[in-house]
Image (cartoon, rainbow, N blue to C red):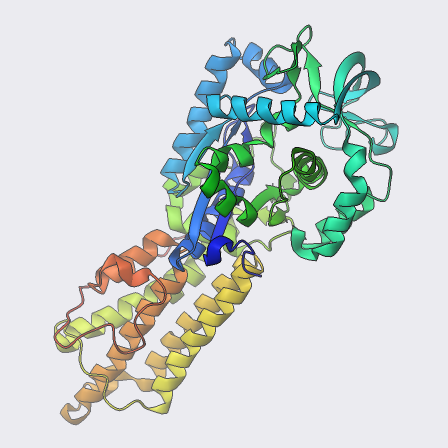
Length: 517
């Protein structure tokens, strides 16, 4: 389904990645979330939506203090360095975000403290003592029931028992209201498997949330505005970034963008985003997000990524080796949103060769080569459309409709499949119409010109449909067609109207040279 936010009659979408924790550098998992968000933002921007795309880094808490100490750096110096690596990686990956936010930014600190004060003044934050099993890796307390064989299910470590005084958020007060909101809007959390997981959580009593840490134990955090002896618990800090970013644009922009918020996260942070965050919003008197979109994990050759195993996939390494668009394409094509996926370099090479080199790249090369050979690049009239020409145009129209449906449902892999299916139809059209044979007879040369004109339209349509997914390739295709960059915008020219009389296209260049395994 398309974004629901339509304030003042305008179509809007606010796309967010999670804030990446700076205890480690960017890897395949964070790259995947970011590329999904970039694709979604490009998709809606191409269609004229008022689009805002946010990413950034989460920089407070126990783990960061520990990582900084291990690196021999002060926390601020450490977070500056690692956050800078994230930013440079995303810029090198061509992400089109509107803001890169840091939880150490002054406007974010101010927003967190204002919301804390508002919730405190409303009576939803209280002081108390608590003893529980605390996992530093997760930065949260666990109940015995949540542990697996007495260990944190994510980090496989035995939590420490910590007893201390802290501030608590009356999260349980909003349990029934949250449950009603999820049941009233089934697509609030998607895919459905994660909605059902959250509903199962809410069938159990929802405990209040510890939202502070004493400065005697942790100083690296945002100070509680009503008690300087404590700093804010990481989730009550980091989650608020989604509000900070658009709130700082002014009240009107906040009212326009916030109802269109689409959060994208991995499944390991489902509970904070599906339970903590909406109850925090309710307590602060703010509307809920439009959608929470949850994807699965990436493994590498069937194993979890691990420094000790030496199998961490670094985005820039893959882009340098195979190209930015090829890496994007494979991540989006080889995964089904919501399910786990496995990264295998041999499968990456196979996919690049089959889809990008043999199908798309071959289509571009053959079409432009024939246009140069037979007409010196000059586009010929379409002439009378024959059934095979109509079928070719229909194949791309069908692909366009399917892309709209599949992206709205976050099925990016199926959207790409539809685009490649249309390109495959165009390759078969070349075989069926045989322009290379017709060109031998002067009487049928005008038909060759019409066939190639239809194929040039197919290339233009392919570039338009593929632009959100493989943007550099789409730009290269329209450049080879000698069309302006805005030819990628939608809605574009109708089939047959993009190439005026006398228009000349350029000579082909290899888009995706075949990779030898």
